[in-house]
Length: 602
Ligand code: AMP
Image 1 (tube, rainbow, N blue to C red):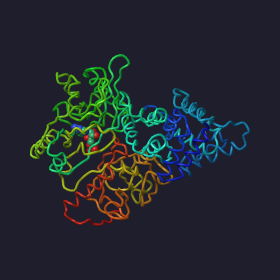
Image 2 (cartoon, protein in one colour):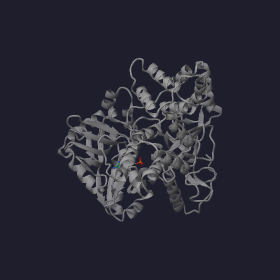
Image 3 (tube, helix red, strand yellow):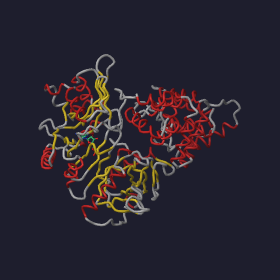
Image 4 (cartoon, rainbow, N blue to C red):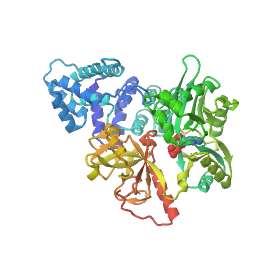
């Protein structure tokens, strides 16, 4: 295949904001390529050569790409940089400049897909002293043979910022259209959720059909998308929803970890965050202890890593465990911040995939799979405290005990047979109930930054306020929920460009639905915790659009940043449209008011 064919398809994707049209473009294209190529195309479409959890990334800095553009176009670095400042995207700079040179060149060959993948692989794997220079030259060589649109996408791929707008949901829709039926779409999604590898799923369905997709299971070493909890505001509501009986567990205030453990020769332990980042180097002590204590050869388990005070044994809040995320001085951090893992689930053990088994069975297997009960290293590995409860009074007592034990609240877990591990989905099989909910009106939302407004007065020259959005899994879009300008301290304001600028987008990203237009757009990437006084119907914001009132969304009133950057959450794992709507409805029920309209542009 010529690379131009792929670049043209990316260009067509980018020029539409209609999800249906994108799905059709992709489905048509998928049918025309080899299964092995398809796998690679899926990775390239998000600027990678491997699945998301793979540690190595292309991630070339813009400056290096600009040097390559200067070298291949013969234009001065100054000219190139100036154009970059104007356009903001090295891809567009390449499109404009590289082609000028190419028109004068007689000796250029069309780029094949294979040669681009090889070139990119060489870029990714070059390490050591002269690696930057080597990468720059490899990129320049590829661009020498590239046409304008090809050059744009090569630069976008190497910087990891593709911006073609087709998310995982759209790709799965297209795979179902190309190789399966609409009814089989959930099986494609499940395969993706348990492997986190869309390339693998695409190759499998293209080569072996749905029968092969259904055989895909969890694998030690490939992270599984985490199961998430819904929330309800009161214990009676939870008991009702659970039909009078369920398991309750303490909800610890730490960092969720999915541990993949393989013992023996060729063995390893990998700890993944809920965003699928590799956290192994942050918790070497936990990784070792888990491996030592596992009975059998291999397992995938989940737990919460919580910091504690060694003098008193008291559990410490989330902020403490984040000290383990330092890049340097890990040995010291391990000594300074003792951490214990409280395990709560088991997904796999010695050849058996437990994700489709009910919660009670998974928990029982978890408790049989570790040596913890023999008293080994009780300060490193343990289980979440848990009780089977069938009355509101007992639930209240359990909640009070959890709070006294410095936990965030409790988690209700369904004991029904249907309570499988629903990878990648948020549902009522697990329901969280937090301390915050008991404080009237105050609640927290985890929202993604999708835009920024330049500041005025004291904040001139910096971002003064942010446009925040929640995710709607049904549409795959982010809808805005508030403009956030309160709760920022000077240090946070100064750090904002460093945190956000890599997500900058010249135009509104196609995954964002917004009426309000900020000075700068961002592809959703950074998640912040926000409190609000309440939620009102909003003519400006777009989250839960049309659900309460026609032509209106919902907006947070008096939003305030809590100081907590949720870098453990992906934007898709942030608060959802359904949750915002549910809060609105609970608030209306509680306040006994009819839906009121608020001017919540703040
Ligand atoms: P939230 O971050 O508010 O959506 O709450 C869900 C998170 O609570 C999970 O991702 C875990 O990190 C954490 N958690 C703490 N204790 C438990 C538990 N016993 N079971 C499941 N999740 C827990």
